Structure formats: structure tokens, C-alpha cells
Image 1 (cartoon, rainbow, N blue to C red):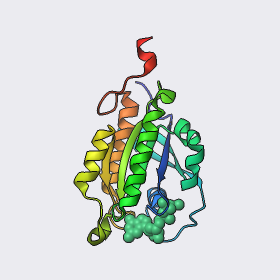
Image 2 (cartoon, helix red, strand yellow):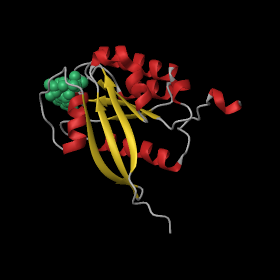
Image 3 (cartoon, protein in one colour):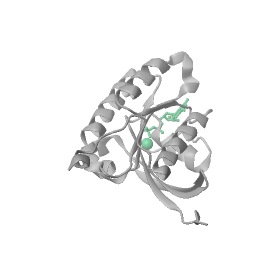
Image 4 (cartoon, rainbow, N blue to C red):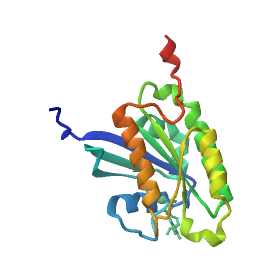
Length: 189
Ligand code: GDP
Ligand code: MG
């Protein structure tokens, strides 16, 4: 029987406007705790082992800072999965996220034939009364960019995010194409 014990390394980049909650999401994912305040200039990479679909995975999570966009090739080329985070109470952060989805799409040719997946993540859903971006709007933009969509709160409800993240891992394990297949320019060569 084939062993599934050897951990498979997977790289996840958290990107998005400053203040959208990337560090809170990263720390919640790694420690299962919500910590309220972070140094907004701090960029770090964390690691957590997980078993998804019977496969042991070593998940490396890069918590980027906004100005890292200047050096976006660094995380674009590094990551297997992109989590584009916005704050559901901030239309501005949503627009910023749309810009990132476009930039990721522009670099797709660099990534092929590497497996990669994108999640558009609306964070801070616990602050529903201050909401500026509806769930439908998030779903629409995610579909436009062939990305998964999830909403979560790093403070209270994280399930949708982890479930969606696991879907991307399972796609990568199975070698399946993303929800809508993307063509590599090299496919036809
Ligand atoms: P980053 O700049 O994208 O890394 O954002 P941070 O993780 O530093 O979060 C910015 C602010 O939003 C901090 O004050 C966090 O406590 C707060 N925050 C992050 N996630 C949530 C959330 O899910 N709900 C609420 N209410 N506040 C959050
Ligand atoms: Mg941060």
C-alpha cells in the first residue's frame, strides 16, 4: 500500500490591504486563538502540520505586509495558494483585493505548471452591522476571477475559511484543476 506519511509541503500567501486582518487570520490558523493587536509592519512565515484527506501536509503560511506588493513576485512565485483578504466593513479593502486578484491573474503564466489556487476571503464578519461589502458582492467578484469565496471572522467564526482552504489542499493533492480550468500557455506547446 502506498504510504501517505511523507508530509507534502504547501505554501499559502495571505495578501490584502493593511488592516484587513491578515495577521489575525494567520495567528488564528496557527494557534486557534484571536489576538487583537499586531505590529502592522511585521511580515512572517508560520508553519503548521495538518492532515487533509489522509495526506499529511506541512503548511507554510506567509503573512505579508501591504508594501510587499512592490515585491509581489516574491510571494506570487512562492505560493501554491493565495488567500486574498479584505475587511467586509471596508469597501476600500475590497477594491484593493480586486486589484490583487487581477495582479495574480496577470502572473498566472509564471506559475504554470505549478498547482495553485486562490481564495477571496471576507474577514471580520462578526462586525456585520458595519458591513460595506455584501456576501453576494464577494461571491460575484470571486467568480469573476475563478477564485473560491469564503467569509470568516478571525475573532469568532473561522470554519468557512479552514473548510475552503482544505478544499484547495485537496485539489492540489488530487492534481485536479481549479473550479474553472485555467490554461497554461505551455499546455499547447
Ligand atoms: P493586517 O494589517 O491585515 O495584518 O491586519 P491585522 O491582523 O493587524 O488586523 C487589523 C485590526 O483588525 C486589528 O485591530 C485586529 O484586532 C482587527 N481584526 C482582525 N480580524 C478581525 C476580525 O475578524 N474581527 C474583528 N472584530 N476585528 C478583527
Ligand atoms: Mg499584519
